[in-house]
Amino acid sequence: MERTPVMTSINANWEEFYSKEISEKLPFFAKEDRLYDCLFAQQFDREILTGLFKTADALRTLTQHKEGMDFISNLLSDKRAMLYFVQPSTRTFLSFLNACHIMGIKTSEIRDTSTSSEVKGESAEDTVRTFSSYVDMIIMRHPTPGFVEKTAWLMNRTNRPVPIINGGSGKDQHPTQALLDTYTLYRSFNGEMDNKTIVMVGDLKRGRTVRSLTYLMKNYKNIKLAFVSPGQFRMEPDILEFLKRHNMPYVETEDFSSVMKEADAIYMTRIQDEHDKAGESGKVDYSPFYFRREHLKLIKKTCVIMHPLPRRHEIEVSVDEDPRAVFWRQERNGMWARAALISHIFGVDSKIKH
Figure 1: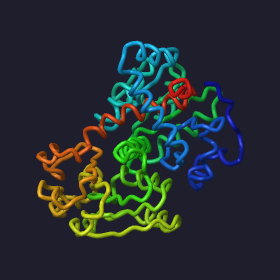
Figure 2: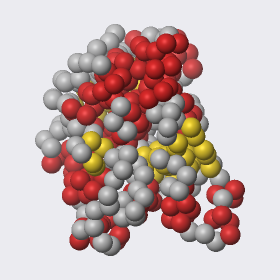
Figure 3: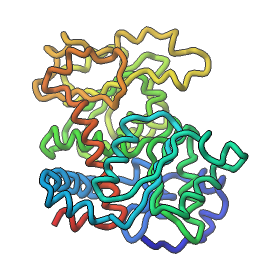
Figure 4: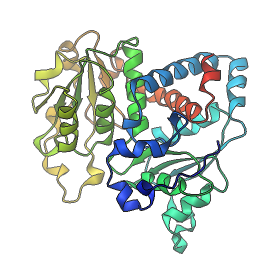
């Protein structure tokens, strides 16, 4: 995909650009009315989401047979992708890797900066720009907040830009996790996404998955959110302000059982102690925020239990046997949702759906 860099005042200086509202920045990361770089959950509106979900469903159907798989794997067989994952990852890395393979894209990977020229003093920005000499897309997970966005900003100002996909950036956003989470809800509710109550449980302060999913829920009507967490790990004020701005009702509570019965989906998360700076996680009793087998009697027969994984103790393993526990399906949905996203960026999604 060719793209001529756009040189305007909004992108002339990184610090100035980074300080802009996300809504102001979105046109810089789009091309011809479709996503070019995928960096923020706010890039997905309802129309884009529905299109991606239909593409993902079509991919699932077509690839059940060799003839269909051969057709799909030829669509992007001329493309190459770099998976630059320098923060620990299992599901996101493997689902992107296999999404690329489904689409016929050849892949390279770096999962540790000690294997790159960064150990010689090369800047992370120069390292990523080097990748663009060899590949047509860069999929990144990086521990530094804002770095994936900075990479896309930098590449879009060069003469050889390539699409950048955010596979997790510090603790700020994880847009493709939100995409697969919403796809899981879409499939669980047979496409009926309006008028739902979503309960999010755990470390909401530092969990980028719940932040990103909250942004996507704006695309649906009459969504109610309940945030359940220890007081130390409440949802950050910027998300609450976002909900107020869009007139989306929410409640905050430390009493998990008080919101279970009304939930259409319960989204469990683990404690994010990798972000600890003062050992705060160890001072919190997390056990009131576990989902236990006895809770299955309290929730709706149609409620789904989700988790971005990996889990620790926040969902008892015996819960896995209940058909409402969809987190293993949720994990697999990531591969299809990400394959659909890649097909959208490269403009072959219409061939898959039709």
